[in-house]
Amino acid sequence: MRHAALEAIFSSTSGHCHFCGDSLIFERRGMKKRQPEEGAWEVDHVIQKGKGGKNAEDNYLPACVRCNRLRWHRKGSEIRELLLLGLIAKDEIKKGSETGRKISEMITRREEMNRKRRTVRE
Image (cartoon, rainbow, N blue to C red; front, side):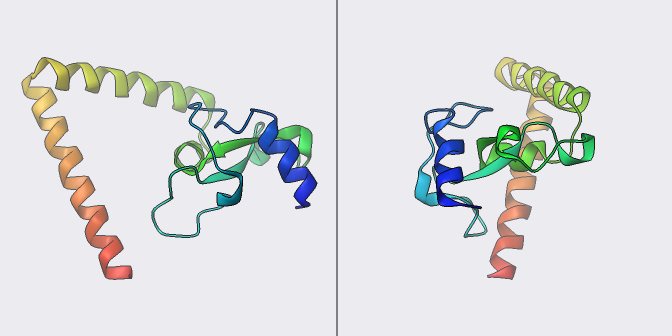
């Protein structure tokens, strides 16, 4: 993609992720490491290709790597469901309920598993 096009896409949100609003760093486009650096970003299709979106500047916005990778191919209903489940899980953790403790344990196990996978690959 042309440098000027990337600058226009990046500037369209004043250098912020169009999902979460975090600041991005222009020079950190793409995921160059297994773990994305702070400010790393990708060009996101606003209307996903699988839903008929085109490869064109007017269909691109900058997204931080983490948000873009979480969204992937998911449909709007799936994203809304994930957000709702996340809010419920967060409330349960905050309340210290049995469900919240189990969710916290599951998060810890998943993080450990991901760390081990990264270590094996490196």
